[in-house]
Image 1 (tube, rainbow, N blue to C red):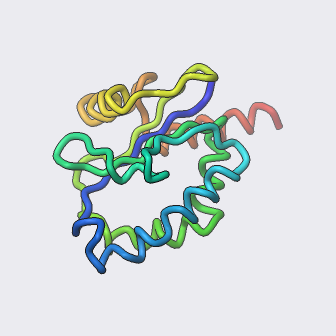
Image 2 (cartoon, rainbow, N blue to C red):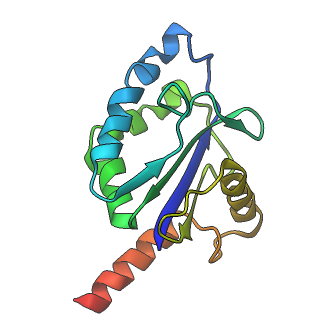
Amino acid sequence: MHLAELNIGKFKYPTHDPRMAGFMDNLDRVNAIAERSPGFVWRLKGDNNNATDFRIGDDMAVNLSVWTDAKSLEDYVFKTVHVQFYRKKAAWFDLMEKPHMVLWWVPEGRRPTLDEAYARLLKYEAEGATQEAFGWKEVMDEHRMRALRCA
């Protein structure tokens, strides 16, 4: 099984607004790092090589990707240049009071649809962590438990 992830956010400004330049001007670079990262499988992208044209729910921007495992995703998010942009997210995205990220397992070779991913996020929001939809804490707890069992 591979790990699918969806994270969403509401842009504070239109993508062409100069206040979004720090984010928009680095999308290709950060996406290229993802695609070169160990464990990367696939990401949703449009004709512009990113997902900024896709929206769900209340005009939410999306990031949808698939990774071989949680550790690979964690390493990309927190151990590459991506973390610099993650730390600055408040400059470009509104604060979200509801869950903005969901994870779930998919069979190898499967590419989730945006509709499926959004349904998983809504399920996670409504029911909390389940086998079908869970958050970062649950997947990392599982990863740590698996590592302990193998040690």
